Image (cartoon, rainbow, N blue to C red):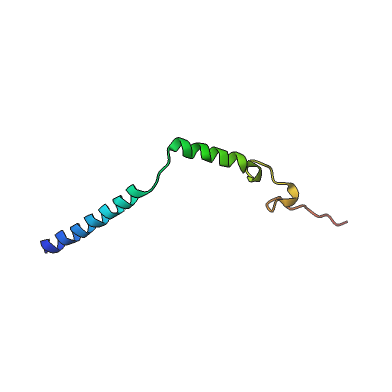
Length: 71
């Protein structure tokens, strides 16, 4: 039973090593570069962001419904 347990531990360790090698081989960029690219992207696309630019009332699907009065 202990040899089966040791074999399963060995398989698990090999999977861990394989995953670590895969992660180590990924190309990476510096955090400062990623941050500056993110800021540029946000500045370029700010005009499309409905949280920054108000949605025209006519295009807003969540506007409160208008009441109707019939006399």
